[in-house]
Image (tube, rainbow, N blue to C red):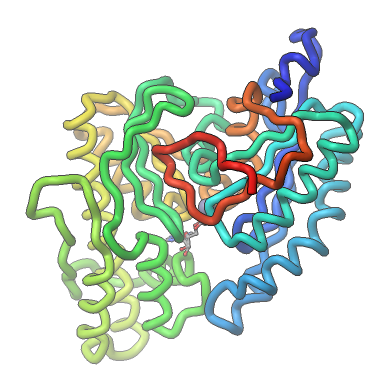
Length: 353
Ligand code: KG4
Ligand code: ZN
């Protein structure tokens, strides 16, 4: 282990770390310092590259990360006004994600860390999402409850501190972002469908389509969203014209939003926490944000969201998580430390290959 503190014992000096995120279809780079905050961040989205396939093509994603990462690195360091010599650690998303895509970020991070003799800090992608609210001026204090809603995960987590996570509930089938994307596909919207469906729902009328709120009528904090997609499919013939499609999108969005709100209220009752954080791509959904805001005012808890651009994948969140985990930095060279699957509740760093 090569701890960051040992690399720079003078805590008064700035200690920026570099962070790389390449777990899926965003190439992202950030520079962060615990005292000065986020110094710079850059992102390239591969949405256009994958759009015609209706989903992320892993091989294309890996290849594109390779071509994008170096220019983004240069731009990010330039914007932060620093060079490689100023860095004190290199964080990267080690999993979960597409293994080929993860390997690109891991290899680049490992190369920089080796060349500069810096600690290499493997970060769990969902811990990045979880800590993204720390990028904002109003930061949540531990303990709090977290709702993490992305394309691959739907998790309710009790957070007692960094690395002290207890899984309260999760989706038993589709993740909520996946449900958004599949429903959007049924409506003929481009990939990734979540934001497109949300836009269509804006002109939809509430109550025209009423879909089930899955698993809210029984105790527990788990979710299930695959049935909702089937309910939408069955209702499709009734969604006539542009207004009909918008009404259906609105009905779907209301069902998801209400389900998440019910489970959040239940989770807070269970934990007794006074704060709820919501993060992950679906956390950018405005109707969800408004519904949870209303719930927080009604029940008197504090609500924290990252700004929408830090809800979806980015490197700033990996930088914050990397900063918090800096003491776990490793000497590069023993392996690339990537893993496609990595439960959040088990945050031991992934084993070397
Ligand atoms: O966190 P994220 O960027 O990537 C993963 O780690 O999966 O989440 C992506 C997911 C996609 O399913 C996307 O459709 C969804 O977040 N999403 C949204 C919105 N923005 C992104 N879903 C609903 N409304 C949005 N505004
Ligand atoms: Zn994500």
